Length: 159
Image (cartoon, rainbow, N blue to C red; front, side):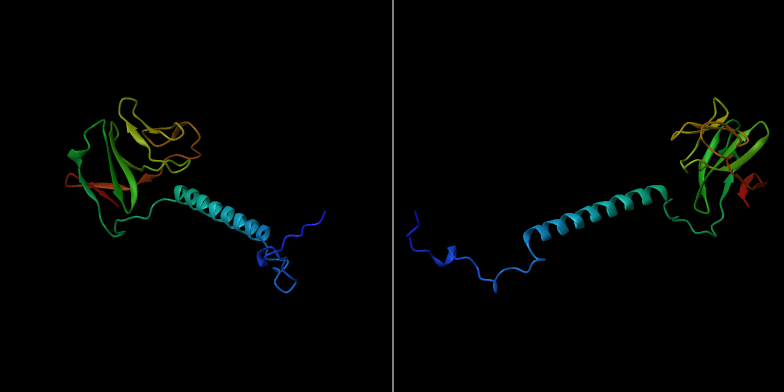
């Protein structure tokens, strides 16, 4: 049985002159749109990972000199501060006042001075350092970096 109804122009098949070119059909468009979406997502994820692993830029001037009164670091305690854009912890032990870069040598987390145990502790991966900066436990590959200081007129000055 054949359809005898009159056909409107909407139902007419397009001739070869009006058909889309072989490379520009809906499937091609959706595939490339999906590919672009995946690339954009991977780029954003890479940006997040890179910004997490890289330290934030310093807001301090590199030439800024830091001095701290000795009275701010009582015996047995520690004081966290910034020197040339780096976190530094000054501790007052039986041997005197010492300063270390407060960045863990494993992945760059900030270590904290624990006066009760007389050691530094990294909360990220449980690395522990002695009061001389030596590695006691954890994944840290090397000791904390000592910061040179001198005490002049009851002021701790970072050299």
